[in-house]
Each structure stands twice: as C-alpha cells, then as structure tokens.
Image 1: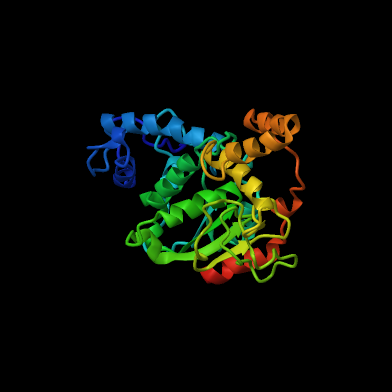
Image 2: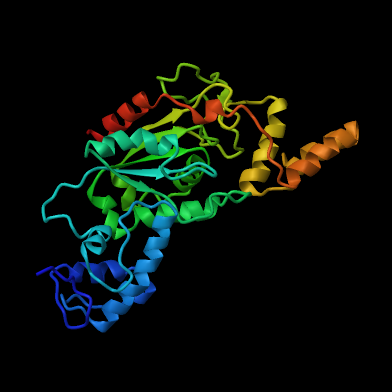
Length: 328
C-alpha cells in the first residue's frame, strides 16, 4: 500500500513538532504548540505557507516545490530543514547574492560555489524575493532578504561556518548590510569571508591576488559609499576597466560616473556629486548636447558599455578561495 503523508486533523508524524516550530516564525504560525498531532491550526498554517514558498521557487529559489493541499510530505520536510538526522554535521553555507537583472543561478557568484555544492562540500542559499530589475536598485529589500535568511532557524547559521559570494549590486547590498551590522549578533561568529565580484563598494586598493588584469592601486569601486577597509576573508574579484569597480580616486573624470551610480543605484537625484549637479553644470557651459544626455539618463535610458570586465572572471581560483576559507 502506498504511503499517504499526513494531511488531515488527528493524524500524527514525528517531525510535525519541528514543522510547528518552523511555522512559528510567521504571524500565521503562532501558538501551534509542540505535539506531533496534525491539528486544524497546523493545517491552516501549512496551507498558508506552501503557496508563498512556491512563489519564491518561481523567482529562483531552489526546489523542490511543496504541495499546497496541506500534505506534510517529504518535500515539506526537506524545505523546512527537518530531514537532517540528529548528530549530522552540517555543511558550510554559501550565501549567493545576484547582480542587477541577473538570475540566481546565472552569475559568477553562484557558479563559483556550484562545483563545491556538486561535490557535497557546501550548501548554497540564494538570495531572492525582491525586484531585481527596478531602477533605482532595491538595495533595501535585498538587504532585508539577506538578514531574513541569516536569521532563519532553518539555515542554522549559528551551527556552521558560512561565507558570501556576491556579484555587482548583490555585492553592494551585502557591503551595506555588513557596514550596518551589529558586531555582537551571533550570526557573525562563524562568518569566514567570501567573494565579491565587480564590487561597486570595493575598498581602495584591494583586489584578489590571482587577478591578472588588476585595477591600479589608487582605485576603488564606483559607489560613493565604498567599504572603508576590506572585509576579513573576502576576496575582491575586480578587473581593470570594470565600469563599476575601477574608479580612479580623486580624479575629476570619475565624478560624473559617481553621479550616475548615485542616480541608478541609490535614487539620489539631487545634492552634492549628484547627476543633477554634474550634468546641469555641464549643460550651462555646453548647452543642448549635455542637456540631451541629462534628459536621457533621467528618463531611464540605459547606455551600452564594455561589460566584459564586470561579468567575466576566472572562477577556478575563486572556487579555491571559497574552499580554503571554509576548510572543505
């Protein structure tokens, strides 16, 4: 006879207490208790959680999908992190943060960690659940998702080493999250470092040792809010002539680039070093041509640049760096 997973009030399963604790993090899962009985309240919470979780999978989160009919089956058990046997050693975690308009499994952040996951050495957790196409960037929602995942009991960050692998705007989001962190938060106790690809917040003069075409020492990321110092254990994987990660420090020509990223990434249209200040100053001197550029930029038209230095990397040494800091 085929096994039918619990799906009705009154049925029992030894992993239901763990599922109730998992669902208790949500407003609709409070007060479920800790018995192994499938109660009406548990079924309601499970049916509420399932379609919302599947929506995250539709955006790129790793499957399997979970049933929406209230069945407490193997997929639910796996996605709730309840399939680990007691005493099982957890694999190190790699949090991957994608770049703007990129897919969760399409960028160097994911591909650098994927061979380690395929060999069973790490677990990848992709960061999604926000609008990755919008301009200005949704850095706040991306940071919120990073924070949510790192504090999610399912991932058990307090029990294992973890690292980050981030590309472009994903690196921006993580850098801001790091700069605004509470150092006493226990999630940082087992943070080992990671990888930042094409980081607009790259600290001055910092670059991974294996990069062949390194940016000059007197350069930093394009953001006006670069890291004041390197993050311990993090390799800055940036190449020369990367529009977003190779800005000459103290050079007038860099100011317009900074103004553009303030508009595109942060939505800062006015103020010191803003796109408005820089381009209107030029418009007063050079007239219609510069005004047309200003109008085009503020209307959201995107210009084509050589993006190869920002998107193409030698991933073998990046993979080795992850393996080294995580000890796998």
